[in-house]
Length: 295
Image 1 (cartoon, rainbow, N blue to C red):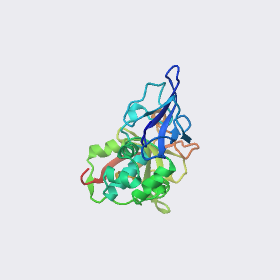
Image 2: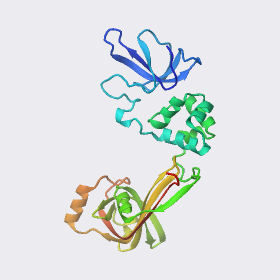
Image 3: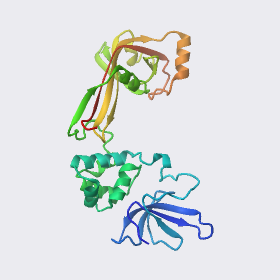
Image 4: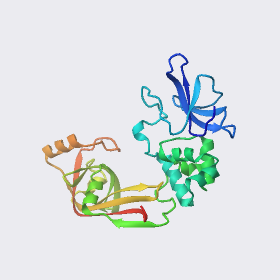
């Protein structure tokens, strides 16, 4: 029996051939890939030292798994293959910043290029030893690769070597704005300039958000406001922003309020009664996107 990192160890019933347990091989003890192996089991996510018995075989990276009742917690469904997770995207970005090929990075990290490609291209959570080797090979840290810096303000990552800043068209701005979520409302309040995050929806090109009467965001009503949404991809040092400018108005019509309540995609994160709907119909819509110059 021979294996490499990223292969799967499959344990089957000797009678029926049904898979009883399987897991990803995350640690080797011999250069020739012979047992024992460190295996991260799909059913528990735990890693254990395994000396495979006669009921076990190695499924090499790239081979299809035998049909099962469904994807296990540690194994993505077939539709997710080729859709990297955040860890893989961080690894690929760090490798790109170092100017390393897949083979060069894998050699530095003492792993096969196939396994590194697997980590970059599929949702994965490798063990601590693998992450440490990658961090050392890519001149970064375990905290960065595992996303432990996500509570920090965005934009602290390394800038792109050749960024491209492009203006977004009106249609692109509307498309990005129409993805409901969290945006920021900014205006001149009685206490001075203010900005507040709010959950919002878009209906007929107008921005709507809910707040509590008398709250700080409610003071935006009857004022010229700026409403901004953005997306920052910290791992890849790219992103976009859209800015809508218009007048904020309270929605007073009961029928309009009922329609908004029915169409709302989510409840405000702040919780509590938020009975005041505010509408912002943009009179000016602008946006920009930052990408690699060769992307």
